[in-house]
Image 1 (tube, helix red, strand yellow):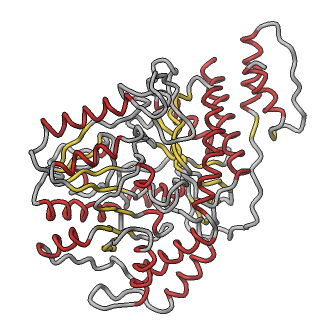
Image 2: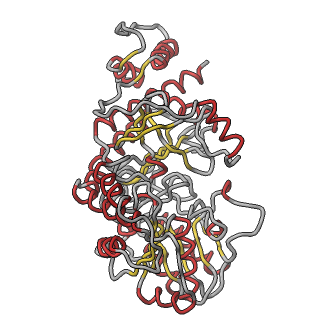
Image 3: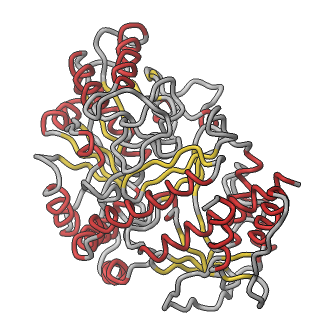
Amino acid sequence: MTLAWRHLLRALYLETSTPRTPKARPSPKVGAFWTSITKLGLHTKPSMPPCDFTPERYQSLAYNRVLEIHKQHLSPVLTAYFSEPLLLHQGHMEWLFDYEGNRYLDFFSGIVTVSVGHCHPKVNAVAQKQLGRLWHTSAVFFHPPIHEYAEKLSALLPEPVIFLMNSGSEANDLAMLMARAHSNNTDIISFRGAYHGCSPYTLGLTNVGFHKMELPSGMGCQSTMCPDVFCGPWGGSHCRDSPVQTIRKCSCAPDCCQAKDQYIEQFKDTLNTSVAKSIAGFFAEPIQGVNGVVQYPKGFLKEAFELVRERGGVCIADEVQTGFGRLGSHFWGFQTHGVLPDIVTMAKGIGNGFPMAAVVTTPEIAKSLAKRLLHFNTFGGNPMACAIGSSVLEVIKEENLQENSQEVGTYMLLKFAKLRDEFEIVGDVRGKGLMIGIEMVKDKTSRQPLPREEVNQIHQDCKRMGLLIGRGGTFSQTFRIAPSMCITKPEVDFAVEVFRSAFIQHMESQDK
């Protein structure tokens, strides 16, 4: 069956903008036939799965007034998606509602943050109960929620000492300080394309162009090549720990990766030429988030950690986006690489959207910090955050959300892989569990990024059909998929059809 026929048959099952059922008509020319198919795509809208929640009526500021206030009084940095920013009003599990009552399937979960669902009933109830009991004490007084949370979190890591913070940037700031205090060295290495925060300190670790400044920041930080097996110089068809591999071919056996070996040589080159003989540490996201869900070759991190420790450095896993069961097969991303870090940082999903973060390390490293600094954080580990954090851990376990991430995430990856095979502009589908990237390209041969304005239009079309997704990559060419872990297969089916319709519309627009 031809590609065009497959698109036509799918379109016939979609909810159309006219009451009539479209009929396929033979065409003497393939080009004219394809144009008719893609024009049909312009008028199709996948049917959204049902939702048993009714939002409250919006009674706040008018949309235009919101735009005025934002322009006059809030940061001028352009962060909002879309030329007409989405004004959201309410959320329920995997759904969001705007001020006009329109419903959206949230496949980005507040930038990989809402782990168990918007306004999850159990988390809400715990928050409301704690809100009526005790909000804040600071670390100079004890309160039960912090000890209850510490006991729950420590059961998920070996012999941990826990420092509670408020954000991922804060957590990585402290991890940098710990690494230097313990090693008595300065240099810290991170990957190109890494995102570890936007504070003055962590900006040195973050290697995404639009987060860099002309002014000095984050002294003592050195970047190294990201072992990206799709866009990098080396990569093949067995590299990734994912149900979906790259379209690049290689001659490697399944248990051997030449790309990994080449990237390790680059890492060694950084150690030999760009840092001191003894270093403080190495930061790595188990899967890069902001850079577009980039996965490394299997075995790379294990070898890199060994090389870092030979230089006296400590190894830090940034689990801000990958932790708490999102990757499905394991609770922590570092476990998927077969490594044990010296320091683990976490945030985002830890509190389901409530400001909370943590740094977890060994007793030895914690003592090294304590000898050098009276570390203090006014809001870190406050009663509200700890009560919410405990309820999030309970929900993940009670509702089998890690297992759901594995099952539904694998289902979704395989569905998106079929889209990659159908559309020339879909260069790569990658990820693990419910952390997925779809990289858009001009063509699969060059792997050059699809122009931003074309990606923007696809993004806009997905929103118009009721699907909210994120963006990532150096050129914002990758769609980031990271829904709450309560997502279901019917909702995945809807998302896949939205993407298919958006891709068809893109192809039709290019034929004009």
